[in-house]
Length: 261
Ligand SMILES: C[S@@+](CC[C@H](N)C(=O)[O-])C[C@H]1O[C@@H](n2cnc3c(N)ncnc32)[C@H](O)[C@@H]1O
Image 1 (tube, rainbow, N blue to C red):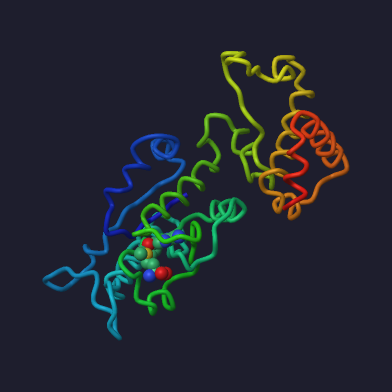
Image 2 (tube, rainbow, N blue to C red; image 1 turned 90 degrees about the horizontal axis):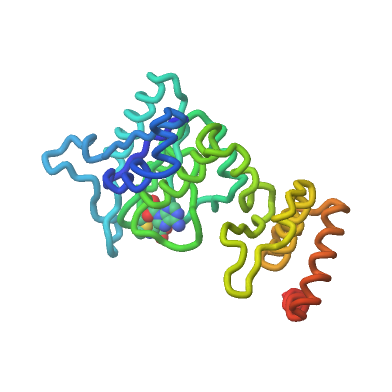
């Protein structure tokens, strides 16, 4: 999979490309990230990428021409490498990204990502060149670089071979509409807190059942709307009922909190 990122601040991407899961995936050629500075695609002496907004007001707007040239050059390079890329603009006004969307993004062979700055980009560029607009949440960042990194990290870790253990992405929060179960490692006891006995039992079916039950219970407590959207099988409903019965026995406020939501 290939990403071409159009950014005024390519150095920021070392956060992704030099360490961790994504860096390893790049080394193994599971994914490629190419960075392109639209300043390199300017033709004027000042190499200007932004200008004042028509109508006045604060801030600057990223100019159409350098961005269009950068997008076209990036798409041409991708095409020469056999990749047909779509174009996405990172924007707080875009479709809010969630895990199911990340999976759909990862199914495409390539994306050109535009990281905006200032007040954003000339609207006509979006009309002419952008296939999709993506938001990473309802807040405003200073630039699209972090948003592009968030999306690329979430996508690349899903690609086959990117994670050490093929199952880990399947068990993560949001992978199947649930939050993840709690995790523990050594030591077995910390002050008065012990690792749940079932995890020490070696009984894999019981462990799997416990993990599913915990995931259902947590999702119900923390993000009940996710469970509503997803639905539950009869077995899952029974596991959740048992979880809630047990939780209200040990912490009576658990049931009460939820019924207030
Ligand atoms: C300061 S913001 C511009 C915000 C714009 N004036 C607005 O209110 O819609 C600069 C750039 O940061 C990026 N950005 C900011 N918040 C974002 C978010 N929540 N998701 C994705 N990109 C974001 C976009 O690329 C945007 O062009």
